[in-house]
Amino acid sequence: MFYTSLYARIYEGGQNLKKTLRRIFKYPEAYVYGGLFVVFLIGLSWQAYFIKQNLLGDLVILHYNVDFGVDLMATKGYLTLYPLAFLLVFLINFLIVWLFNRSQNLRKYLNYLLATALLVAIFISLALLSIYLINFR
Image (cartoon, rainbow, N blue to C red; front, side, top):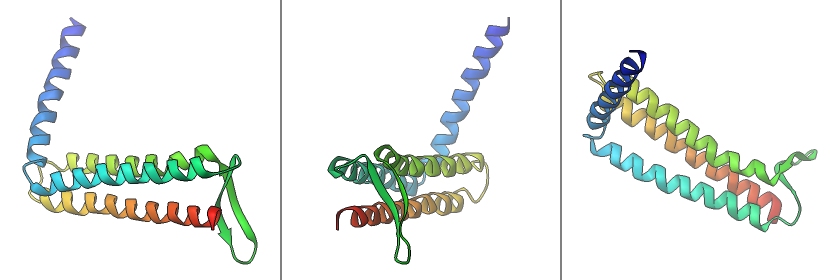
């Protein structure tokens, strides 16, 4: 008895998710943000992989201060957190858009939140660029 109720709730949740995604993706901006998300995620992953492959040692310098020199160092594996941070920000913002799916201002929320996530991707890309310049120039 419990299992049928559980399966019914899972099926109902799937149907509600389909309706919500149809409502969100009826706007052309959602496709643009989705495509830019994929492009930025691939670009950030490539930047992190490129830095990771070209390092000679196991440590990477993450921050350099003019007054004190190297402030922050970590292992190579830490570089994979940058693309994952962007993925997390994008998913959280998409979840917030999903929660506002019945709002009259869905298009406005979609533009604000997903554009903010892409702005975060630009800043993460600049951070990886500075890590590259600190370590290789």
